[in-house]
Length: 86
Image (cartoon, rainbow, N blue to C red; front, side, top):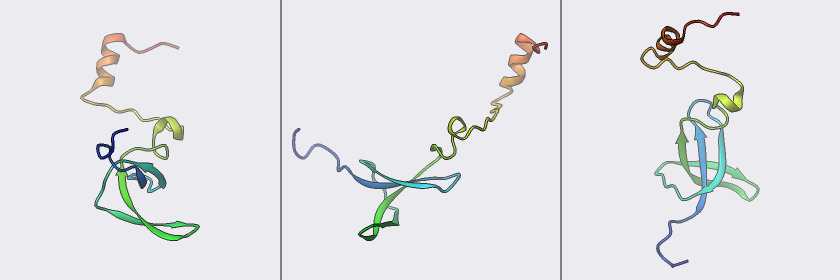
């Protein structure tokens, strides 16, 4: 690899905006916000990235389902194809 052209790959804390769950991983993303994270060597400060959806809040991983009705899409589908009969 060429030196000097790659971004720094360092530990970063990602926090879910909905649930507040946080996890430490490595990334090249940068942030001005920081968080103190307990480690076996003591508490360290890491960059904090707030994410809208993670595995803690995503419907696929949590088992919950949501119907997002953007501009009447559900009603539009029902008008087009009708109600399914049991």
